[in-house]
Length: 197
View 1 (cartoon, rainbow, N blue to C red):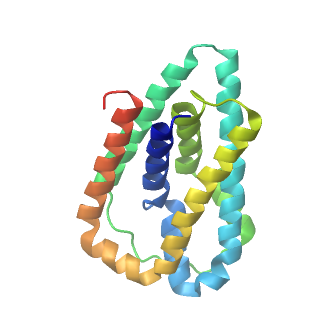
View 2: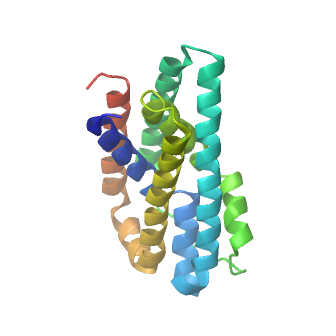
View 3: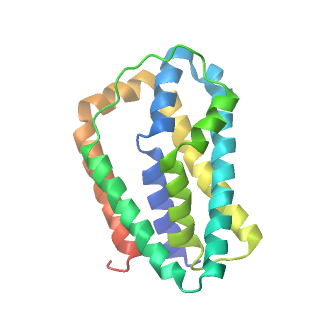
């Protein structure tokens, strides 16, 4: 994989998994309520589920590419379209509400959240089909990228968990600017995938 593609993939991944989404908003809320330490098992569950989905995404996209030769360019454009959709969703996103979580989240809850988290599922499919599989196909390399993508998500989770109420208030005050910047960066990533930039 060329270094320029790796950098584009990393930027796209960071924008996607560090932006507000089910994992990050829930961690923001629960960490402000229970603290980061009591949320650690929940985060481990999120990371386990995320790594599982990244591996399955890599296997699915690779298998589909082998079964239907020539699908890779189509998958690349589908991935770019999804990133543009994420840009639109990010631009119009409202600040998170202060919903109260009554039960302390668990490891199993973290895994389950990933299995139903459409954002993470499509994130894995997009990263593999748009960035990784056009250049790499060896199983160990695909596993490396699955771990890498999960680690990027884990870093975003930690940022949101540690930020707690501070980030919640900052985002609530400046969400329009933050959303606009993240949305424009996602558009840039989509245009790069399509070869327009």
